[in-house]
Every structure is written in structure tokens, then in C-alpha cells.
Image 1 (cartoon, one colour):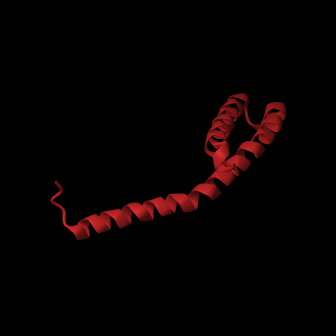
Image 2: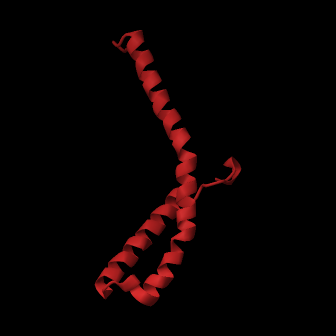
Image 3: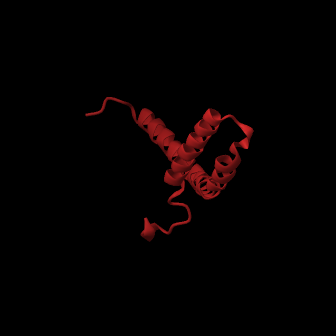
Length: 88
């Protein structure tokens, strides 16, 4: 049995609903940004691998690794962009 007052329960419910609304509002733009980042990031690999952007080799390897990790994260976050609910 709960000992909290009804007003406390209402405040907790409203707080949870606000958090849910915020995630629903931010989800689509974040997924869209991540999707397009996953599409466009591989284009940065080519000049990095060919010319190294003028960095020394160890910096180029670190930058390539960072781009690869960013691309994987973008793929994971943006994989549901523009899918219909039946496709998920």
C-alpha cells in the first residue's frame, strides 16, 4: 500500500509524462540527423585514406578510428529513421 498523497502521485505522473513527451519530440530529429550522418560520414574516409588531410600518420589513424566509431553510432541511432511502425 502506498503512503504518498494523491497530489504527490499526480506530480510524479506529470513529471513522467513531460519526460516522455520530450523524448517523443526529440526522437525524430535525432534519428534523422544520425541517419544522414551515417550516410555522409563515409565520404570523409576517402580523402583521409588518400591524403591524410595533411596530418601525420598516427593522427590520421586516430581520426579514421574516430570517424569509424561516429559512423557506427550514427548507424545505430538512425537506423529507424522514416520507417513505418510495421517495419520495425
